[in-house]
Image (spheres, rainbow, N blue to C red):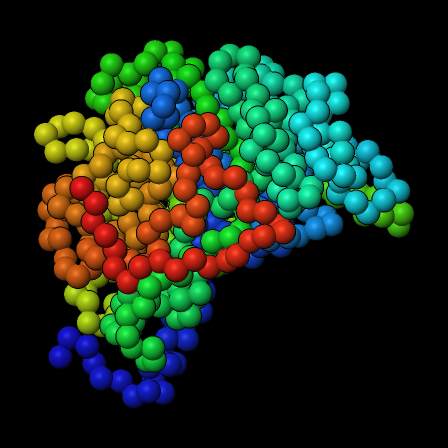
Length: 498
């Protein structure tokens, strides 16, 4: 028999041992993905997105999110960017997995009245350039610095962050408060930094319960429940802090030009985001804190879900600290993924997933992919590095939020793993990749069968809880503290969109 019949005692023993190896087998992108960073949320990269802007196709939009699972009603000390963290977005445009351009973001928080506990003194309005948000007690600004070929250049000074969406008394007409926080950059483009709805969507509750997928309840090795159920968005109703930067494409390519086609050697860029802290932190008896020393990277993010489902727990903090150019040491974890064995064990009714020789995962996540016929999707060479690779020569296929959520798996080449759009269902895509359930296009690259029903595996959460914006900054407005709810239901099946 393909699967041995085990006693219930042996089953639970093996399952506990397997889950101890990968305690977050399919978690929410990079929300609390490693032991150390889970204790430092303001420096925690949660998600990274990169796409050619559909409404401005000569520009690149990058969204780097930090601070996981922000409760909208988290006053009186609402979440803010951390003044002591160095937030960075890195761009490799030569294929060597090293930074060619870096964008740095440093925040400064001013408390106008330290003799009150109040976040705001009254209704918050946009104010004037000399007195922005006059009733806001916590005023946060930031600088944007570009480092290109080792040369720093300041692109924005004292850019505003908008207030938290507190409630109808404090922040009525919230969208009007966002407008002053959209800042032009000196070399073209624009930037926004502040609270937004968390655009990631995933069924956290079921996935944390022994790797359950509600639409596939009946196939799970542990019962109950046995009936298929709609997925539930465990990130729904929560906010995050987003840095959204829109750049002229010619500013980030190696030759300073728009790519002539998707096969242009300068068309593909690799992107990752990071957060760093200084080596020394001193806590004083008067409650003050000082930081000094060199900067050390404490969090990074290129492709989603890597530090959760690929990197073992004993290496997670170390992985966060090293640069993508050093990722060759982690290739073995892609080639022999523990998650593939868990899929076989937890869902014995599915065709077996390969647990060794997974060069397909190396290609998708570490080097990029070619296309049939000698064309390029986002291949950058054989050097492995966890970068979100995007071919800037592939035009957007839909307005923001309307692309095929399965991206390349369904033939939409403008979607994940070619960059990542806000609407891309990366949980389902990566689950199917690990489970050998690719669509026909990707399968043809590796000469593999398109296993059924592995090619329908998913968590039943296929869209975000809020619609995205079709114009900058694209990410939906943050949930309001006064009136909000969590966990919107998803679906029992994964739709296939044409």
